[in-house]
Image 1 (tube, rainbow, N blue to C red):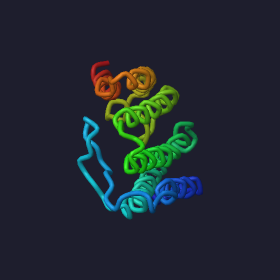
Image 2 (cartoon, one colour):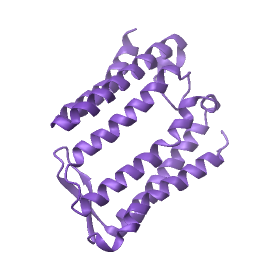
Image 3 (cartoon, rainbow, N blue to C red):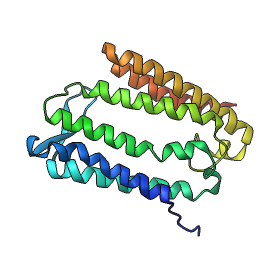
Length: 204
């Protein structure tokens, strides 16, 4: 059984994830007791939480997920020296802060178009990760990981290179069109950039 490993970076970035509670704490007395915390594809809220959970609970949940992701990543020694691993440490903290801010702004009535904001966040994430995927070497934690890519280095390289290019292109295009009422199309485009590499590795 592999030994569980937790690094200082794991702990620091988990604390950063907890800091996503700050926007809610600043305006805690101004937000309603019941807050929308999940939205449908049409931008309408379909799930609500108490403001205590929204402000403090969600960051705790995300910090726990972050630590789990770090532990899983650390199980494969091949990920330690890869640049994308360092970037991944800041993915959940960054997304957590952005999402928490979006939820609070919606609760205050300042923000209404959560779909566009969500697409923008996803698009930026795709652009960042897409730039690093082509340089990622075989590992069991990061990248397009299938039985075929993990057993054949050539397939891994070709598949993750394609995935990186598609994710970056989809991110740039989606970020551009989301402001023109085309957020649903952007979501389809982002999803397609994830599906195509999986199909590609199966046929090459």
